[in-house]
Image (cartoon, rainbow, N blue to C red):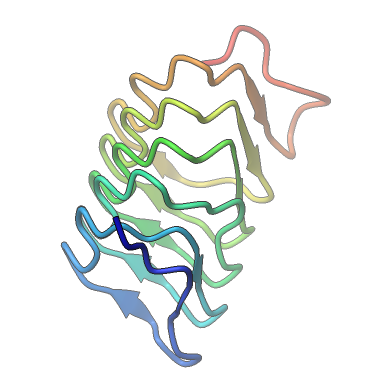
Length: 134
């Protein structure tokens, strides 16, 4: 099976549209700091995608944006993130740690559902991991 080894989203891009990379066999992607929104199911089913941090400019992650991205282990959210959509990280079975730099105003229903290994959530308003998370 052939995989894309790296995809670079151009600087100045502000949005990745709905379904853009759905089921694409990506392994890595470079996201610019200008990125503000990741659309619905944009990376759904990208099973091999390695991603550890999201751009500082990102304000919205839509519904199912990263569902079934099995290779995620740690995700770091920038300070500007405002909204995490419904089931945005659903079934990210490799995800163990989530780190927030800021305080999102909305984390929708089941944003991290079926992330069985997710045990550590770090937030700027608490010391260490959030107890009994998720």
